[in-house]
Amino acid sequence: MSRAALLAAALIAGAAVTAPHAGAVTEPPTSWPIAFADEFDGTEIDRDRWTIHSNAEGDRCLGNKGNNEQLEWHTWNALALRDGKLVMTARKDNPEPGYEWSGALITTAHGCGKGPAREFQVQAGDYVETRLKLPKDKGFWPSTWTWDGSGKTEQDNYEYYSDNPFRLYFTNHQSPGGQCQHQNPVDLTQDWHTIGQLLGPDETVWFLDGKEVCRQGSFAGNGALVLDMFVYSKIPPEVTEGSMEIDHVRVHRK
Image 1: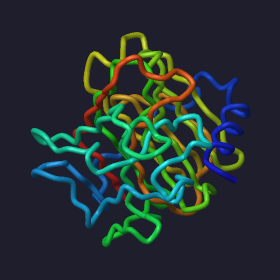
Image 2 (image 1 turned 180 degrees about the vertical axis):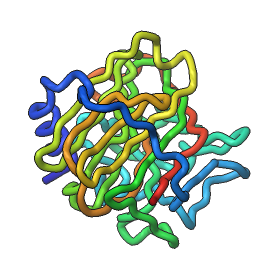
Image 3 (image 1 turned 135 degrees about the vertical axis):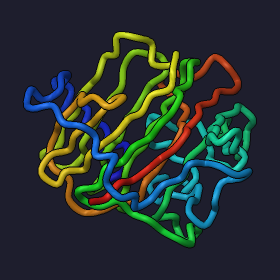
């Protein structure tokens, strides 16, 4: 099943789930040892650890018109390191026939034979954390997610549609799956935010700025770590360029 079909199924199945679990509040396990991290220091992205190719993207592993996201073709030029931050930029610059936008995706595995040399995959029990500043202009669809090469273990650390700067989506695509839609009281683009996800094994738990905001089903298996800033075809941008920043991504493992 394609990522587009998996996303549609999860949104339908979890559309009614809009509030976090009512159980005991937990804290993100940031004291656990780090299994993988990128602080995005230096001058360019580490291509031994990341690739822009992903077999989740159906068109030569760089584009995916079959999904709602994709007006964009993924390029290395969409990625830059500045002041210890990863800057992901989508541009309306016609990078490839049939694609008006260049855009950003990086993954730690399942790179269609294009790397990375030092692959990494998350596993059940890991805690994944992204610190970021989301794009303000509408028409963009950034996310952090996991991908095992087939979509069977996809989990969305977060998804954000920039036409609504108050809402985040947290989705477990594994059966029984489920989704929470978090409505933030303050515009999410006004500040930096830390989004964390504890990948089961019994439950998947999401955190926003250190506070629990969602619980859904279990996580089993493993998957590449994927960071992206897609261009959303259903509500396309009115600007010709848009960016987001990522301060770090970390995976803690007990």
